Length: 318
Image (cartoon, rainbow, N blue to C red; front, side, top):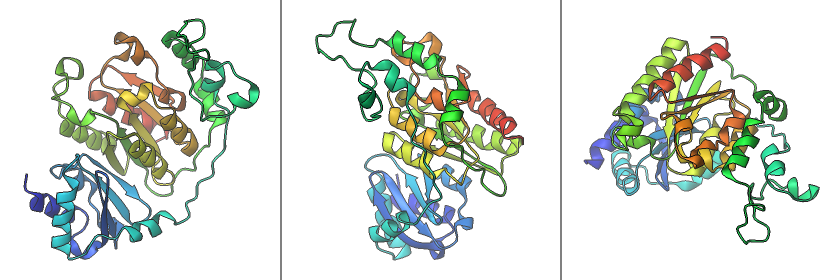
């Protein structure tokens, strides 16, 4: 793949060379600061070859996600095209800008119900939700998958809304964020008998078209195989997006950290899964993110995203 051509496509999508004030790389992300963020064409950026997703960072920053081993070469090409050397300090300064986030630390019902501990220990959300105290593997001491499913089913959406931060709706036209987790970028290749033959690019097209049809001003699609990137995307959505459509992939069944991020920002959220989780393995019956969502859609293939976008629009009164 021609790295120079990829860099040219990304550069065109962010408003051209004159609109770039700084650049750098972080893991699999190409970081760009722009002079005028309104010149960034998110649709064009999504369709650029090799781009797996992107997330906006601060007022003028954007991070473009590439696969492992690609971002370094694209960054080198971008430096050649712009004449601007990488500068991580510019992004450190942007990251320290104050953000209007008000976090309410709340009690985690999953934690206290799944672990039989003292009251002080139960309030420590850093502990694992499933623990075998004597380490002998006895079923009497360890929470089972069925136990966790039962606990999650007992959490009503109203409980989540009462317990979490409720984010103020952003001013102006409403925007929506679609977040996809590990392996979603492999749609059409990955186990097509389970996930279908539609490609990741086809899913992106569905999301953008459906969002506009539903009345949103803009739809940003982000995908990453890394848990921390998904958490960053959720946090960065605060004050920018009116709602989030999320498919955390396998992190659905393991990540309390993603749930905590969702509860912290308090944005309306819908959980989407391409396959029908109810008919799959026992371990896929557990969904932590569900406790922060007002709706779950499974088994509709990539069309589930279309339904989610229209349902989110209805929820927001569009």
